[in-house]
Image (cartoon, rainbow, N blue to C red; front, top):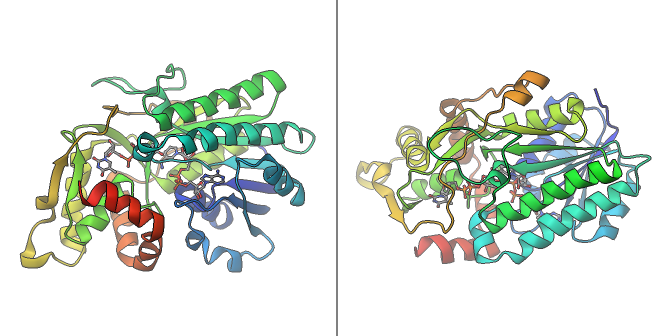
Length: 355
Ligand code: NAD
Ligand code: TDX
């Protein structure tokens, strides 16, 4: 088992990164220091960790910084004598990558390259760089079969192509320079603190406010849904016990079509949220809209490697995880209001409200 004294978490103010930092400090039994290195783009929200700094004095630090700046990375790694990195920082939204791919190339590819270089320079101290990646690098499945660690890469969006490039760089740095790395390729996450531009939180917020629920194309695209805390426990297991240079696929064994996801959310909301005017059922808000270009049809993960080799299991099903998520959004309206401002608001109004 690897042990770490100080982990730099890139992108720790984003959805999964913030959940991971909470998991590390509250649940994982980790006793060292966590440094959150985040540029605070539109997707980064320090409010997601507002209580953490005061609950963990001397163990949690925030450093505003950009992985596109190698000197900034080096400074933080040295300031805290970091011995591990968990790398989440990325541009993560497929629709944005279609509208404006530049930042995806700079952050996801060049940023990851910078991290690898800064890690390589500190080979005597850094014992692991864990790279968080996605199942989207594998492309699209037909009606049958699953992605696994041996599936060839075939990305279709600028987002997935940039993540694929970053995965290749990580593997190349391991094979060429012996940089100690592990990689996880994970399916769609959902849960607390997810930015309401992604399917599940967007549908919750729109359904709460009686707005249209825009489902792309015929709504039959399938995703494999994983509760975010289950993803965090998988990453931690791989960081502790995964083999250097090895990839682990992580999924929820939970395939659902998009329209099925939205129907489930609507019926849960009809029970748990304040009723719409006239008691109108929320699934009447579902509106089929123009499809996403290059929209992958189906993702599904065979996660038997991480289950068999590292003993990881997911704990939440769609029923339990969706309900936890919905209850969290209904309760944490302040967080939602705080992220739905500025640049985010402009984007949503331009891309969704008028669609
Ligand atoms: P997110 O968009 O919610 O958060 C990204 C974070 O990275 C933000 O805090 C942002 O400020 C920060 N960031 C962006 N550019 C940066 C830069 N140049 N320098 C420093 N920080 C920067 O993303 P997420 O959904 O939490 O995803 C985290 C990681 O997990 C990504 O690498 C993503 O590809 C991967 N992933 C996500 C999912 C999912 O379903 N959300 C699934 C599989 C893999
Ligand atoms: O309004 C919508 N309507 C809709 O039908 C939105 C936002 C999405 N969709 C569809 C597109 C996808 O088939 O729902 C599905 C999920 O969409 P997103 O939430 O945008 O996620 P996806 O494109 O599948 O990518 C996510 O999972 C893999 C994350 O954003 C990535 O960062 C991760 O790598």
